[in-house]
Image (cartoon, rainbow, N blue to C red; front, side):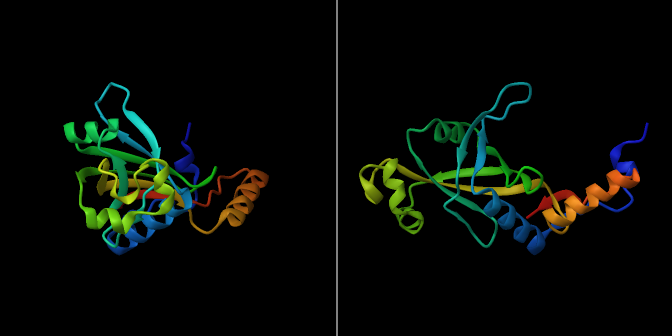
Length: 178
């Protein structure tokens, strides 16, 4: 029996690097709005995960978060800096996973740069709350799943494929190396 990839008449794999990868990372992260931030990654065991939204993605593709110095994630990063982030932008496309390392700092200038008033929900003393830390995530590798064109064209191609009995999928996927 043939796999769906062997039945696909068009190329649906494209690895991205450099500026093109950075653009795709920013695009998919923005569509998702938040991610699952995973720590304590040990083969054969459940990893720790929590939803988080980056305060900023810089021009090098680094993600910046604010976190509390007494959080489990800070403790886990201090023990093992390896992190994986999982993104889903829609029910059919805009998926991405990034793997890399995280560091924690108390850089007051960076905290001021990343701060917005909604953060007071978690840091009741405001921007000067002594518990605030900065997490910098530097991706080293990843993988993405997206559409080549848009959702409407993808639906038309899948519908046509269903009618003619062939696989027409507008998806594209590949390694993403910032």
